Length: 129
Image (cartoon, rainbow, N blue to C red; front, top):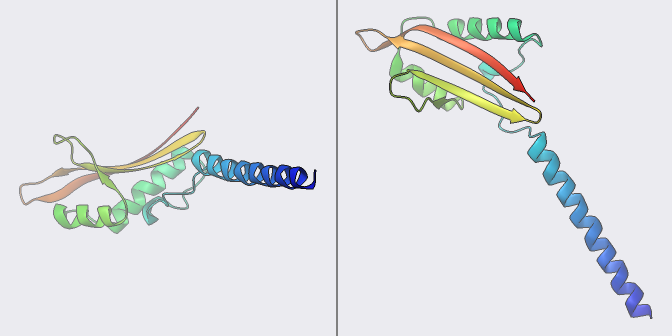
């Protein structure tokens, strides 16, 4: 009888540990703190309109035009931005998904004849369920 009680206690402890692991894992899937947004994207105002404006101002301050496109793209990729998968569009984005919302920061630009990025535009979007 004592061995049966010990084995039930062991099974109970295993269920508790598995439940905790499942809960923590589910929490990180739904409310993931990762990936950490690049510095251009952090600490924006809570108003989406104001956040979009501040994001654009940060980009213009950090990368005054014209800027060599190669250096510009390298710096953005170092910060965690990803190139658009569209050869007709020059741009990068960073996406953070955290239930129930998805945040996306995009930067697009045109190229001049010298290979510089011009008309740099930033955009901050939030989509929630």
